[in-house]
Picture (cartoon, rainbow, N blue to C red):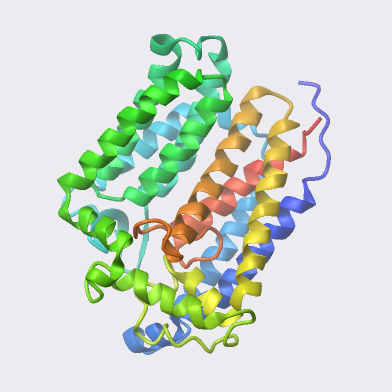
Length: 365
């Protein structure tokens, strides 16, 4: 191929490892009370997070040293495996229900979320498909419909679990890849209108989603029901002030705020570390997104560029949704904060994807 390989972008590695370190510290701080109450071990969630962090770092350094073109060869089979897992997770007795969604495959406390792996599988496949057919993307039927159909099928299977948050991230990252590859804005605008209508239909079809929307508009209408999580999150953020109450000093983690170590961990960060701590986390994500987009711009070919765009889009959309929910800008949906929230599938997938991004940065022009 004649590609010259250099050192990976250190400014992708540094914010990733710093976010991971902050996450490990905050998972312990946010979960210690809950872990002691449920398992009699205040270190329970910390131990799990450390295990998955080590696995994720190993995966990151592995993918960092694997030529990104390998993923082009296995993109189709990867997508097939992800679809297969999305189907079998829906089968009662095989898929495990947690938090009201049949999203898990596994035994006991350990399991994987197929929807998390589908996000990366979709990025790899769309990058391959669109890099090979870029001349057709401006055509609606031959260029745009095939990737949209594949994306829509994956989204539909994820919604059967149901998992709107992960589905939204998958759609956001996929549409970014499709747009960057050269799709016409007019076509995407029309489809966006259809998508909004479909989203409204999904909300109407499930009463609990409608409750979340009304709670988002005014959580104090139902402070002990649909609005409870939003209110408790704001109660955590408010007292944090500029510098926070101090590490480990959160009050909301004492069984007031649900899921303090996963979906609402940014609330605990704001409460304990204040505006300064929250801003530092956002700054690290901003640096990561900036350097990731730089890797996409300087990538040696279209396939690499689209993968980089997809990975950064996946991270950015997930951060925006998670923090938007925490501060009351979006309705509550279950989605983790990348690299920081407790969770095995999400953490290992994110670190693995950063490894692919680092490999692409090694070939930047």
